[in-house]
Image 1 (cartoon, rainbow, N blue to C red):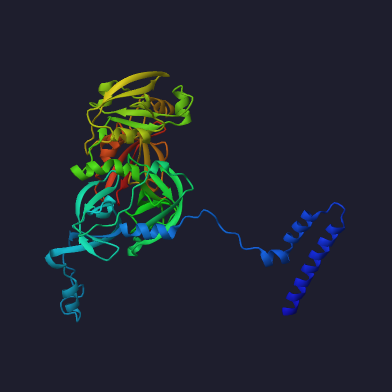
Image 2 (cartoon, rainbow, N blue to C red; image 1 turned 180 degrees about the vertical axis):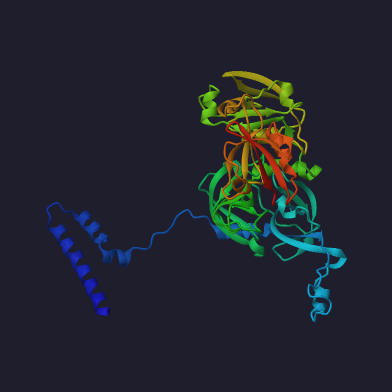
Length: 491
């Protein structure tokens, strides 16, 4: 084998020399050509050339050393009322009666303790910490562990379930390390980012990746607007920072897309600009007060835009209007397309939802809409969003695996209906309860649990608190005929 290798090398060198000599004999060959030929030989490349270096890679080491101390581990305890003692199934004469007596009883005071883990970010040197609301939701005890292993009990200063953020406070001596907050609006797809957190309880784990998408909507609510990244995010990363190459926090890691519960390269972070807008109010009042328009809106499809006499499907289509409500008082009508709000163009429903939510209650805002192909100008006085109210999206995903949307006059006509009523099923998740129960795309839901459904808001209320384990009756119109379906809520 050694001989063969040496021989192969001799053949390669000989071939190279023959090639060069041929060039020298050529009348067109000059010194430059000869130099290029020598540089191109395998022997020359192997002897003199250094391996190519990758340029412009981020200095991850420096970033981690600087920012990792500002990331904390958050552990919570939720105390639940325990069930009755587990009886000995074999009777009192069983030789293992002592086992059942000791381990079949509830925990002290009849309670059980459930623990969970997450991450957080130190916002200020005096102990304010940012995390996800779902990390500390319903927690009876919250413990924060710093990078130097010190532990503190934390109290909740404020929280906002709609955007899934929470503000905590710990009392620690000395100045705590912090991380600067960046500008998430400057993020670009393909940009390098780092995720720091405590996945599966593994403290200060660092992963890298790129920004996969921005403005991603994943059905998390009316203020759905996420940064998507392929930096590994796993359970326990929630509440930790997403960091750009300038060492700035640009997002708060909050969700993953996974069928197994582990990372598959699709993670989501809340843009830090959204968080920065809410922090002052969260710190001062402990909650967020949002503006309310009183409309149900939906995305314009090319077909809907064409039926409304629009060339480009941009804007937010008004599918329903609350009565009473700011929109109704301002003169908006079902079927209007809102194209401008407070002087800014509205390209799609999500933009409108975020802008209305961030508008101060009582402010008079100019609004432009298209009605029957003509632009109209209105002025609306923004109301206050109550807990039971939303600037609703016209698409809602229910617990049964159904995706539904409100019915406009145009949609009603396309379905062969005389007037808009109920909500239409736009998708049925394969293998879901709705799928197994026989419901189909295009079905119109008229009643839920004997409650009349006339809008998406009615559907949201009817399905919000369905009893677990009990079948719910749906009245559905399919191809002009009414039929009932019974779906059991297992969630």
